[in-house]
Length: 93
Image (tube, rainbow, N blue to C red; front, top):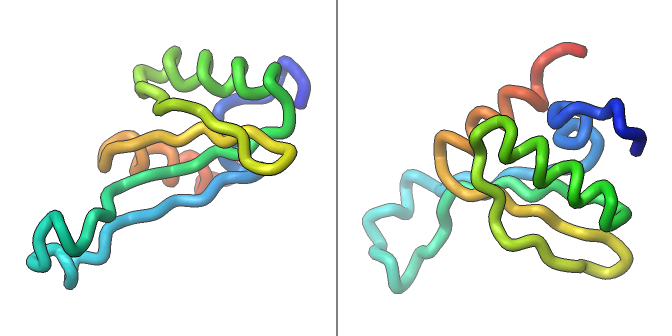
């Protein structure tokens, strides 16, 4: 991706979110450990650096990035951060 890509472009290109199942919250922490998470997948380390900078510029703390196959995954945790990124993904360009 080029330098001109915004955070919304990265989120729209290849990301997925996980939100907790409200019906399972009463099971307790030991049985059900799902929280809010959004994963942004990029192909190069340079794109990963751009995504991390864009997240920080948006006052969103990025999680620890990791490699998966031939790609990089940048997780973002927390209800407010995930909801704001999901909103970016669904907005019209």
